[in-house]
Every structure is written in structure tokens, then in C-alpha cells.
Image 1 (cartoon, helix red, strand yellow):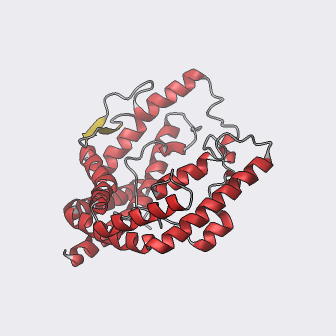
Image 2: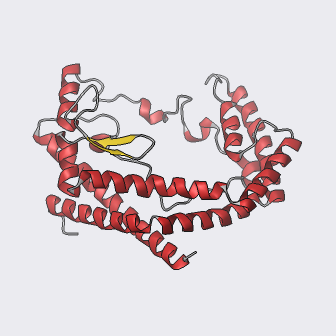
Length: 297
């Protein structure tokens, strides 16, 4: 494997992520200014750019944090999924999201007009720019403030969609497939699952499932019953401690990190050309956004 190419691709992706963060902020300002000119000053949750992203942006082809918690973290807070820790509601929304939304209070005809001005449609997407990635399609508006802004910044919006999807989805998916075929990783995962079964958790064959089981313990608990939450937390901690012990015995985290590094490097090399093209595209879009905003910083 050409590690120099992998490092070069990762460096390009890191630079693209920085440029993309700045471009997204500027893009939101441009969309908001466009909407303001059309007389709209109130926006739904997510702001002027809500729902405009394509794919999941991430720093390379990595696949998350350690699979098994550390013994210290496990004893202190389990997996950290107790909803009381973050103030999250059981429907998945943060407590602050339950506050009144000025946009929701607007008349329905104003909301529809807002949608037309923003995206060029209201009830269902139509007339947008699409990219077929093989397992489905992604689309962004071609009209309205969002569509007009994307075209002004990126020019070829279909190429923007293709590269965005490739860099933030295909690279990761390809790396995940490579990881799944890594013998050392699969052996460590099998040892971990066997240890968890012996420890009384046959229903958690994977680290992902372990966290799902932990979250499920809180799903139907009434907010008015703190004792029930305390009981669920004790069960969570007990499971997480067993998880941590199994992770230590199997060497799962260290093996997974090494395997992820190999998989990430191979995926980055495979898609190096698209990553470089994405860096160029998003950098030019950022510079156009700066010019349109009169920002010379």
C-alpha cells in the first residue's frame, strides 16, 4: 500500500473539511440574505441552511471511536447513554428543542410561500438536481434561494453532489467493507462476543448492539420515576463493565484501531482523485462565497 498517497489524500480531505465548514457558514448567510430580500425573516429549526447538506461529513474514512469502553469510563457512567446526562427527551430531541418556534406559529400560507422561496417547491421535491449513487439518489433544489446559491458557489451542482457523496459516503463505506474482511479484527470481535456471552450478555454480539440494548432500557421509562432511571443506569454500568473487561481480554480496541487505519488508508488511496477534486471544488466555492459577501478575510 502507498502510505504516502494515503497521507496526501487525508491531508487534502482535512483541508477540504476546513474549507467546507467556512463555505457552509457563508452559504447560510447568502441564503438568508436572499430570503430576506424576498421578505422572509423567520426560519424553521435549523436556520436558513437547514436540510441543505448531502451525505455525512467526516474526517476521513475512519469509523468512529473505540468499540469497547475503558474500565474507568464504564464504572463511572456505563456507555453514557442515560438521557438525564444530556437533557435529551426519549423522542430524541434535546430539551431546548421543545421551546416555542416562531416559524411554527406562522400561518400555513406563509410557510408555503417560505418553502417556495427557499427551494422552489413545497409538498414534494421536484425539478432539483439529482445524483444516482447506485443504491438511491440524492437531490438538492435547482430553484429558490438554496438552489440559486448552490449554483452560484459550485457552478456544476451535479458534480458537487457526486463528489460530496463520494467523499463523505463512498469512501467511508468502502473502508467499512475493507474492515469487515480484516481477519485480525474479525478474530478480536469474535473473542469479544464470546466473552460477552459468557458474562451473561448473549444478546449483544456486537459493540453496536451493546449500546442499543443499553439505550433500550430507558425507552419506556416515565420521566416522573427517577428510581426506574437509576435502576436502568445500574444495569447499563454493569453491562459496560463486562464490555470493558471483554474488550481488554480480546484486545478489541487496539486491533480495531490498527484495522481501521489499514482500511482507511486503502480507501483513501482508491478515491484520492475524487478527494483532490473535492478539495479544489469546495475551495473555489468558499472563495466565491467570500467574494459575494465582500469578505476578504
